[in-house]
Length: 182
Length: 181
Image (cartoon, rainbow over the protein chains, first blue to last red):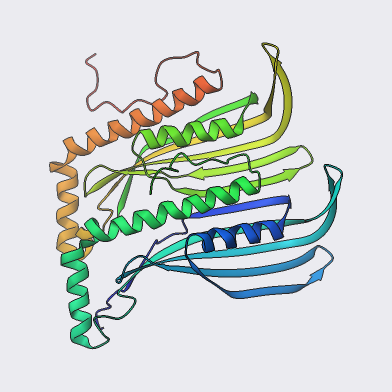
């Protein structure tokens, strides 16, 4: 079997997972997360938006986002967000004397990320180029020295978004003691 | 695959009464950061039920000790019937939560987490040999670290919940030798 050269270093498990069952502002959450990415210079792609016809228990939505950002000429961060919303119903709530349309649903958000190396294919696709890239990644950048720094940065940045979502949903476990990391 | 050795197995803490969920979460998060653990929040579930909120949080922070071994603490918290109540303390009104908490602490030592010693059967054999006979003094020291960290966290949480009555550590390392009769 041919040896596989890796251009993408994935965080092997999802970084965080939030499950929430209750009433929340879906539009606001959507906008908040979108703005979080845009404000931090990420290019956001919504590559799946699936809406299932409502059943008596409510509608079902699946949304996938991939956001990327170039760190330098060689490294690119990817953040993947997966939303699964079940039993979704729109309800009208009166809050502080104002009528507001909110969503009652079961929400799952999964956060994951990956670090892509040589995204511009500087080393090319030839066998020699790939060998050089592998050598560069393995012995010059060194996974445990340089690449792990990028990995750490991305990891803790994802936790910042995780915290923002928890705070927006007013979850009891809000807060992040690691806010000053990266 | 890396190997996990169970050091603390299902140490429990149960509490029912008044507490502040957010502060408890922050206390644990801060504690782990100060001890040098990296954050890993595997599960965070919150559900509103007629009896109150159901909250389940599972965290699995880790700390690399060497490039061969790392400490892992696994803490699972299940909070049920969590309601918001308002109390008055020293003439100041405070919002707290009332409910039940169940916590389960596990501690592990994970060795060869980079899977360096598993590429060949000979390496695997050598690793086992070294783990068992040569690195034992090292790994037993690592075990003690995990136990100490978990005991410390356990005591911090007990103190936060006003359960600080027994100052003896909740979990002790198994003795290497039997006491003389």
